[in-house]
Length: 160
Image 1: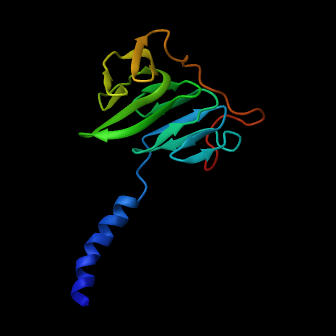
Image 2: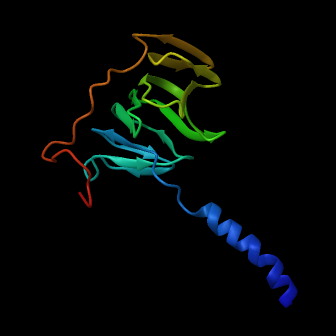
Image 3: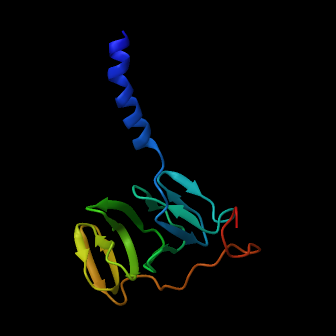
């Protein structure tokens, strides 16, 4: 029995480590509610929310803006969805539906995709319709940051 416990112990530790939340890589701000990895986020209570690798943002009832430490900004259109992934030490932002406008920051550690298509320009609008990808300046939402809900000052919600 003790031998079985010793064999399980490394598996339990590995499982616990993989279940631990990742460190935030960006923040998302929206004037209205959205879903973050299956959890409904209320913009009335939180003005910006940290996001990590593995998160999926969807069910946007208003545009949202993601901001990364390297000054990368991604404006995501109402009704759009995207996933945050990691590959080869790089952060992958993948638009899976709807539209976005992106502006790459100071590093090359963030890559932007629309479905399976890598987007190479430093600033562009893009939309996904079914399995098609449309690129161009007028295909995504503006970078105008969404404001906080009425009566709520801008900034983080807790621990400012």
